[in-house]
Length: 257
Image (cartoon, rainbow, N blue to C red; front, side, top):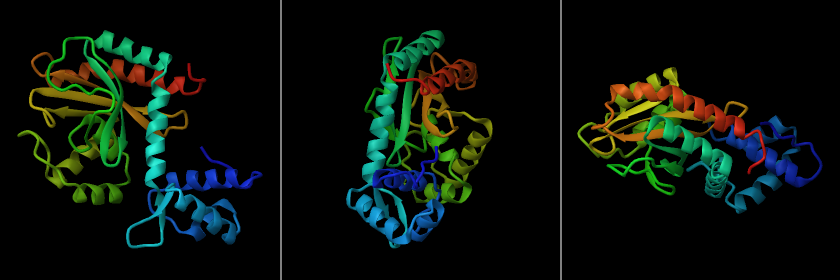
């Protein structure tokens, strides 16, 4: 989505600045914002200062360049979570969980972690349970791998090499080069799997949920005890999860209910 900075009112311009900042893969300067949005530099500075004072924009560490602020990230996460906690979208989650016979969950990335915003459990709990509000590391969850894989190569590598990767199980991938190879495969294949990497005895997979314009907004995943489903058998979940993710994406075109 592209917002028009030349619409009447400072609020339109402020939203356009936030939209521009949120779609960039690097920190930007005030001059870049002004140029790309066709704003007078003084106007851009004034709006940026207002947004920065509210925590919606912030300076990248050690620079004057701008990135989205923590308050905006938190608000975005709450907004996405609320969007998926509607009767229609929860019904889609219930249906796919019933079809595959395992717990399904919707997760988003926030502050270098996966936060789960909705889940449906269809069998007695065994092992890992991704309930709403639960958070987990990016690098050893299927949803996290999808979010990491969509980053451009250089920012992806920089982030991976800066993460503190804890060895949760003997299968947790903590070697940056090995993880980068997995993420490249994830990007190429369009889905992700985990093989007892966060909790011993639990495997899982996830597919992306895309906004109508193609932007990744969340992931639909499944977690299952390896005693019931092997890592190789997760392939059978890809098609039903993909169908449900498409329905969730299409539902975003309609008003919440």
